[in-house]
Image 1 (cartoon, rainbow, N blue to C red):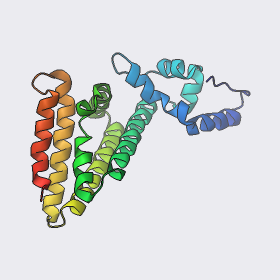
Image 2 (image 1 turned 120 degrees about the horizontal axis):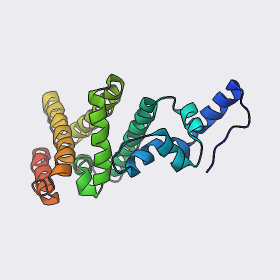
Image 3 (image 1 turned 135 degrees about the vertical axis):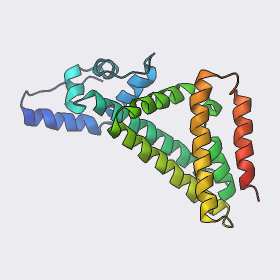
Image 4 (image 1 turned 90 degrees about the vertical axis):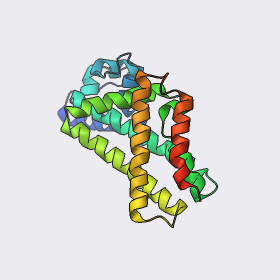
Length: 206
């Protein structure tokens, strides 16, 4: 799909830019550009290529490279949330919902190692950029709250500390597996990852 401006006026440009921002196929493209990049980098030209538009339109919608990266990070979070919502909705009971969501977190267990590479590349960018780091913190805290809610429903006998510590352990294990398995898929094979998740989930069984 090709996007172009009919007028050079700033008001018209802003209106067109806003419309493009609201268009899911267009605004999803920063994520797609990072995902398809061999080195998991993002550029305006890569997004323009995906959209079939000019880099000018890209810069009207995403004025800086940071805007591109932040938007791609938000898209990744939205996709993760939608996936976990579906997993949770399909579970037959609270305990199954908790266990199924936890098992869905390691990217390697879903055959989504490229997704993990994108995620880790965003984490690396966050080290040097506080705005991107804040988006990472928000996304991670959303995950913690989800696990806490599911754990409290699945194990009503747990204390608040039991629930929060379990959520932290889930986040640490899943994010750690996503990172280290990219570099060493022999030591952190799918089988090893599954065993690690199973050991963690032993705590949830009644």
